[in-house]
Length: 88
Image 1 (spheres, helix red, strand yellow):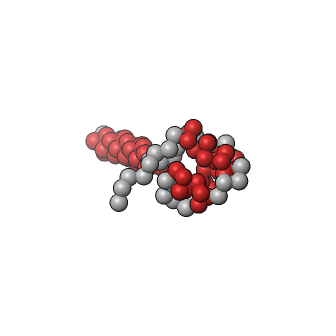
Image 2 (spheres, helix red, strand yellow; image 1 turned 90 degrees about the vertical axis):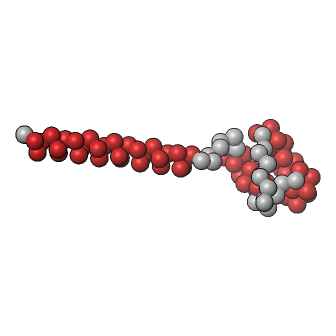
Image 3 (cartoon, one colour; image 1 turned 180 degrees about the vertical axis):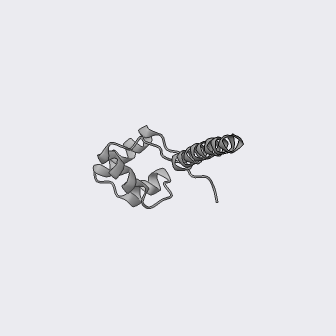
C-alpha cells in the first residue's frame, strides 16, 4: 500500500472550484488521481466552513501526550510534597 498524496491548499481549492462548477466526484478523482471517494466532498464541506487549510493530522496525539506529561508532573509534585510532610 503506497503513501497518500499530500495536496496543497491551492490544489484543493482548484479541485473544489471545479466541483462547484459541476464536475462530478468520479471525474475529479480520475483526473487528479484522488484515491478516496469522500475526499472531494470533505474538501468541499471544509471549504464552505472556511477550514480547508487546517491540518489536524497528529494533533490529537500530540495534545494528549502534553496532557499526560502535565498530569505526570503534577502527580510527581504531589508525591514529593507528601514525602516531605512525612519526614517532618
